[in-house]
Image (cartoon, rainbow, N blue to C red; front, side, top):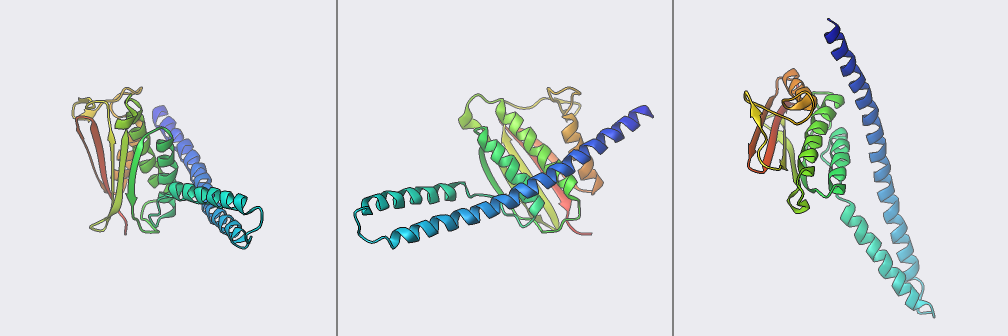
Length: 227
């Protein structure tokens, strides 16, 4: 009885933390979109002033400034690779996690398409995607060779369900015990995070499969998007 109450309280606390995280990420994402829009406007405005500057004695400096602004524009283009799946919450959690992966020197490839509205709530979506990518990053971090670290994400609609696939590099093949993956984390097996993923998939009568090859681990999930 006590154990059940403790587990329920832990779940409530995790939900509260996740809801705060969702709000924070959504606000950051909206600010980023506004910043990108304003940044481009500033560059185009300054370039227009330069174009109207004529051939005065400072034209050489104008040329340098023009080239500098070109580099800034190119730089913005290179980082403007935010995922735009069509679902705001999915975009928010993917972009925040994958940006973190790139900062940790992990090669990232991602493609995502999803309806604006999903059957499952934002908290459950955040738990599933967040845990899959957190575990993928942890696995990549164990590889000393940065060039071998990668995460591949593919999300799309298949047969009326949301298909989620996350593949990452690993240091060898993960261990199994009684058909379940074993983790080095306290608690054994595949950890609290993935247990929560399992429960969410079961909650919505979805489908989940994990598979591994030497140096590669993949999780596939399908969740219904309609009633």
